Length: 251
Image (cartoon, rainbow, N blue to C red):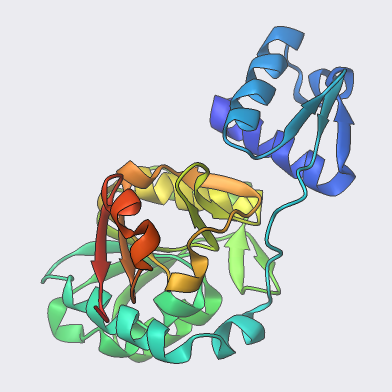
C-alpha cells in the first residue's frame, strides 16, 4: 500500500471513530508500529490529527462539508466570475480533469465544442452537462456520494491513475498557509491529489471564503497548485502570494 493511501485510510478511520489506537491501526492496515507512528507524525505535522498516548484523535477545528444544494446557493456571483475566468485558460485540444464541485460545474456553460476538449470528471452532474454541450467526456466509475454527486472509491482511483492532463480544475473547502489545500472527505481527497499530480497545471477554484479554513484531509501543498479566487484580504495577501500563484478575478 502506498504511503498516501495508508494515510488517507488512517484519516478516514479517525473521522469515523474520533479516537483510534496504534495497535488497531497496525492490524487494520497490516503495517508495522514504526510505519504507523511515522504516518501519525506526518499527519499531525499537517494539522490533520492529534497524536495521543497509544494512538491519535480527530482534531476539532475542521469545517464540516455542506451538501450540493447548500454549496450551489453560496457565493454565486464569485463562483461565476471564477468559473468564467478559469474557462478562458483552456486551449484547443486540452485534456483536462474537471473535479466534482459547484465552481467547476459553473465552468461548463463557458466550454465550447470547437475547442475539441477531452474532459475527465468524477461527477455525474458534470458529465451530463458536458455531454449536452457535445464535449468528449470520460466519467470515472465507482460509488456515488449522494451529497456531492461525486464518484469515489477504488474503481474511480484505479481508472484515474493512468491518465495525464494538460490542466486540472479542482474544488477545495479549505486553503490555509499551514495546512495547505484541504477537503472533508478522504476518498475525494485522494482523487483530487492524483489529478493535481498528473496535470501539467493544476488550478484550485475557490472563493475568498475558503481561505484561512482547514477541513479534514489535505490533498495539495500551496506551492503545487495555482489558485483562482475572487479576491484576498490584504492582511494575508502577501503571505499567500509568497507560497503560490494566485489569480484574483475581482481585484
